Image: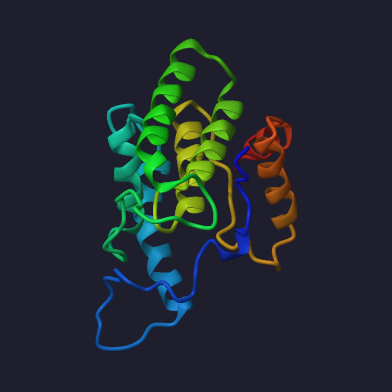
Length: 200
């Protein structure tokens, strides 16, 4: 069984700044990097969530899953949209990532065509599998939540209002979110589906 939440506090290592695209004439604080990422993510949010995106714009293909990560982080990081080659403290082995991401894209297409689940459970399953795979060097949680929201928006629902500081210890919903992912690791999606029903 893969643990989606293993050391979730370490999901964004403080010392990992290789590939930073911001001007190199000074040292940046973690807060400044987060702000740059948030500005980049806002552009993707505007593109995909301001109105229901068509399947042409958001086709949920293997290539597009990577493109979305680039659109969210490409102004800040060189490695945005590129599948990781190294191991992380969370996620599957790096060599398994391409196959697992392709399988996720294929599963989404199947679930969508055959209406295997309602849109909230489909969104929850997309979110959970994306977190499990952890295909990129960083930004995987935010990318996973964006994927789920784009699916919801594309299928007639409003997005979930995830908070950017969802995994900070100060967030009152942190434990609930982590528990929902852990339950999904064991095949119980009830809590995670309920969270995806809490749209705007």
